[in-house]
Structure formats: C-alpha cells, structure tokens
Length: 197
Image 1 (cartoon, rainbow, N blue to C red):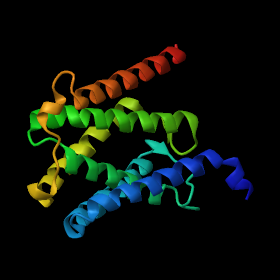
Image 2 (tube, helix red, strand yellow):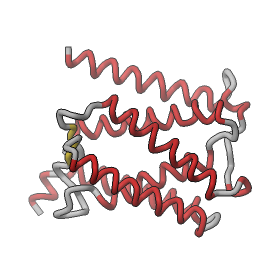
Image 3 (spheres, rainbow, N blue to C red):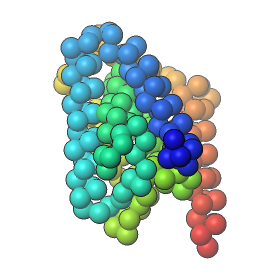
Image 4 (cartoon, rainbow, N blue to C red):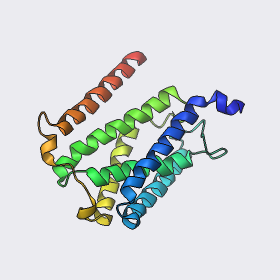
C-alpha cells in the first residue's frame, strides 16, 4: 500500500494510458479484428522487444513499473499504448507520402513530448548517459514509419480512413492542429533547454 501512495502519479498515468489505449484500440480493431488485431499484436510485441533491447544497452531504465510488479519494463503499457498509436497512424494517415510526413511529424512530436514529460516529472522512465531526447525523436520516427509500411501491407484501403489532403492546407483543421502541436512542443523544448542553461 505504501508503494502505491509513494508512486501515486505513476500509477494514475499508467492506468489512464492503458485504459484509454484499450478503449481507443477497440473501436479500430472491431473494423476487422484479424487484420487490425494482427497489426496491434505485431506492434505491441515489437515495442516490448525494442524496449528490452534498449534497456540491455543501458539507454534508459524504468525506475517504477506500475501494474507490472517485478518486471523491469512497463510491459502492459507498452503492449497497449504503442499499438494504439500505430493503429491511429495507419487508420488515419493520408494516402500520399508527401502528406503522411506532416501527419507523422505531429504524431512524433506528441509522442516525444509525452515521453519527455514522463522522464522529467515521473519515475516511469529515466534516460541514461547514452540516450537523450534526440535519440528518442529518431526512434519514434523509425518505429512509426516502419509500422506505416507494415500497416499498408496488412490493412486494405477500404479499412483505412485517410485524412483528406485538403485538411492540411492553410487554415483548415489539420493544418491548425499540426501547427498547434509543433509550436507547443517546440516552445516546451525551448523552455526546457532554457532551464538547463
């Protein structure tokens, strides 16, 4: 019980992420449980394997792994949050690669910002000397683009709902949302760097 009280924030953040990801994933997987379910499973297992590899290479560690007890990685969180993010990307990314890049640019910035906030304000993740935010930024790009490719092979076009490219044009909702994400995340990065100087 004292462990729960001592790490209440970590437990709350982890529980909300897991429950929210399962809830969101359900609505995508139910479209075709075999295809989207397979993508979910592959991306979840891959996230855990990559995480174990990075842990073995001493890139980062997980001081507190809520809901997983003695495990050295947040297995349940990785098996739910990363696949959900992959499903969102594959389901809604625009058809053409010229527009997939800004779409994933926003997703990467959200993911890295969330990870950095966890690293700064919780004990869920802690970077070690061989890892920093830029490494994380590159890893997010690689992971999401690999699964965009894998998802493109697994999920037929009729099961995807790509955002129309008109939405990314100046003044439209996707353009506004993307710029809001980018400006906010870059501003927060600037504030963080400023506090270190």
